[in-house]
Length: 170
Image 1 (cartoon, rainbow, N blue to C red):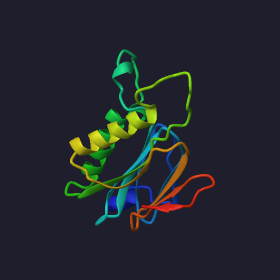
Image 2: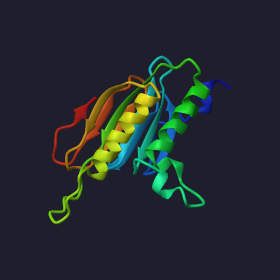
Image 3: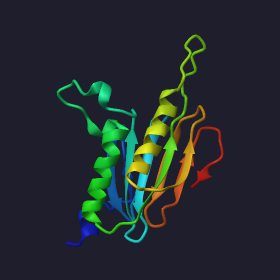
Image 4: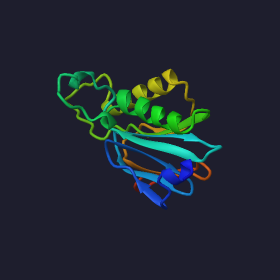
């Protein structure tokens, strides 16, 4: 069995909130409901294998006191775990990333926040990818609308859909 046969190659692989999945072409990785959450695709073009993470929160530290923490929920845990898995599959991978999401979904006039959860998620994902040495080659972040992200693992084309807006290709 080849490495790509061990990976999901079904036509469309759905990644839920607080999940990450790794797949190989000809699969497409897809996640919906990216409000303040961030979708991060980390991809190796030569092998056409990538992982898509849908994180909710930037930092697991405030939850460290809990007996169990779902690592896929947090940028500081999910991204290093997904990258480690990709590197186990592809030790010589040349990984690149694209990020989508980080919107400010709920503007409360009576609450003054210095930084929204979406902005904190964007900053955390960018910082973690920099620490991991993975360049961000495309992003569609911020704003106030939710997004859907679809990544074609054959060519790394990333489609971003928002309600009542033009489709964006990264």
